[in-house]
Amino acid sequence: MLQVGEVSRKLGLNPQTLYFYERIGLIPPPHRTESGYRLFSQEDIDRLAFISQTKSMGLSLDDIREILVAKDGKSLTCQTVHDCLLKKARAIEETIQHLQILLDELHPLINHCHQSIECKDCSSPHESCAIPDDPRYEFQQACSSWQGLGNAEEVVAIN
Image (cartoon, rainbow, N blue to C red; front, side):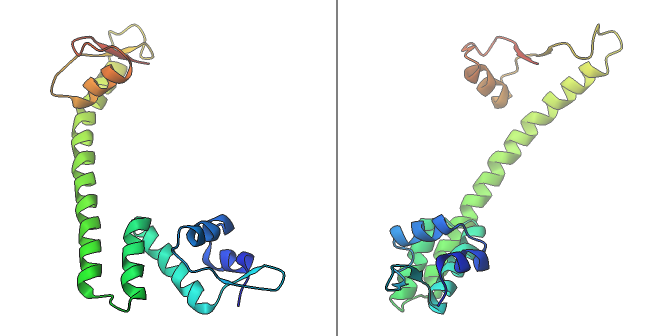
């Protein structure tokens, strides 16, 4: 049986994380000494390691809870794990698609700024970079909204 500090060092977790997992029910309340110190069994440590590993793979605490509930009921089926992991894989693919769209929008803006920096006729390569409005660039429109310009036809100046 290990105390909180020993478990947190062994698993590389903040002690507050252990308390949090206990509070939200991801781990059962550990045994306690007569003086109230928490004592974690090997089974508790294995469960915490599982939570830590699956969290590092990108699963949410709700996803992990779903798997643990199934496991605790001794009905952890391949279908349960498959469905949870498939849902996560789809979310990752969607995020990648959104990031690719953003990257595709950033490249022309980066090239425009790079050309302005290397412009021999420009008065100073460090002056404000005016990016022409182009409705193809959602990024530019988002910047206009974020900067409070409101009108997508205005020019965004990036310093």
